Image 1 (spheres, rainbow, N blue to C red):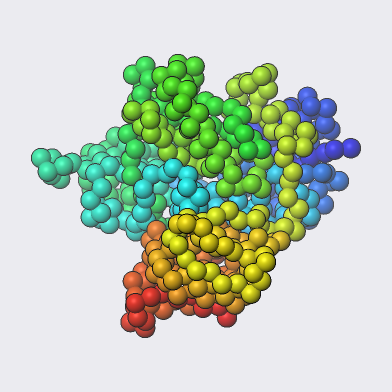
Image 2: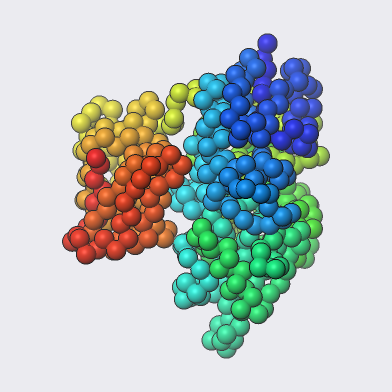
Length: 494
């Protein structure tokens, strides 16, 4: 008998809605395992299930405390410990993965979707339209960058928590600054409230941004959104098994359109008609391309923005738990019923827990010469594109790789056993567990994730290198390594 185990918050509306859809599809009522028990180290065998669904751990203060590894619960709405929460979520998901039952959301992909810097860089590397972005350590660095309008985001936030839409005055408005955010300071603590505030006092704005910057900041260029019926809008697009399934228009009077902030669903047929079928179809293809970056996940929620001319669009966010769209029916199915249909019909096959990576796609970069010790399985050259990894089961790479020109390299889960890259690397991103990733400044620093025991970087222009993550016992920080090297960066393995 086909059965599903749900790891979530028992009694939460997400768990209830999925349970109802499963029962309506003729499946046994799903077994529910709480995130609290997972965090406490409970060993569960999946109850004989065919699949395990990871559901959002949100809306439960004790689960939040356990994921953060904190001694006490956060106050209601308090923004605290986002990076610790992210590490805890991934660690807990790894425990579930170890039960040996196929997951409907791959843990490596969950990890990336909850890191805006890595997610943005991965999307860009695959040619998905995203806003320009940079990393910042605080308010002054953002101001000095000189971009007039930006969205400032904590790397591990969700539901617009801590997001600040920030605008600076021009030459005639020197010193003027305005910010829109649901964040508010109170008694020295930062809270996420269910309404959008407008701030114009720069000291207050700087204090909020700097408080958010404890784990660094992901800063995106502000794309002026299109409007409809006098309200700005964007879309939440649910992609299920690679296809657009459900779309909701989110409208508001501020730059923040999240529905829980007092905004409302908009007129989907009217928006689609205003955008035009050609631009609409292109936008839906972009959403499917974004979801294709996460092939081990049954469903992905993509937040998509249209520019004011409707002819441009960009992906703002990718959400692992983006399917909570109650009451939205397409062909009589809600989001959960559509997911179950894709699963039971075989349109989606959950990867085996023993497989840590899907075969990689081409990585954007410049022409490069790549040498591998297994040519038949290794890499190739394409005009202006670099395929950086052999398509080996499990994502393992055992090849010396040399890039002769500036390039973008994305390392998918795997092991670089004997690899060396000698090149200026403006972008190096780790999209999953790997032994080593390093290079020149990558969105404010090299992103090194779980299982990175050691990184050595030597060369000029190295700045803000970050090493470590869940399960990383030690690492060598290489900020300021320019004194040791010449005109290139290199990453050496073991």
